[in-house]
Amino acid sequence: MATTQATAAAALAVGQIPALAVATRLAETGRATGATASAAAKAKASVSAARGAQQASRSTTRVAAAAAASPRSVARALVADKGWSSRQFACLDRLWTKESNWKVTADNPTSSAYGIPQALPGKRMASHGKNWRTDARTQIRWGLDYIEDRYGEPCAAWAHSRRVNWY
Image (cartoon, rainbow, N blue to C red):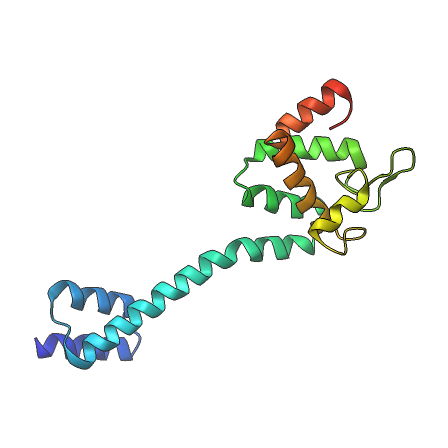
């Protein structure tokens, strides 16, 4: 038993095997004792915490990277974050191309609709950020929430728009 612990500790120290593998193997065999058990538990907890943090940051990282790109890229990432399919993004793309051509400063002087989603009035988007007049991400987040609340999903909003020429 002492030999197994020593071998595992040595392999871990020189980086030959991952910490989680050592912790798992020693726990499975019941050979983890004393300092080795403590080190194995710490390694397992550290790896588990790192995996959780990595998963939580994937969405934020994808959206942040898209923010430097086009409004469509931002929307594609946010649509995926809502769990909607690429088909839903295609409907959203058609809808917002028709409404604003994805222009952040699109303004309809006859209705006071504004921005990518053509919020009516535009200041409604202030609920999602003070920068609603100029920030694509703020406008898109507001627009997606509006569509979800009112229609359930982008394809339903697009179907409504095709029927009555507004959404």
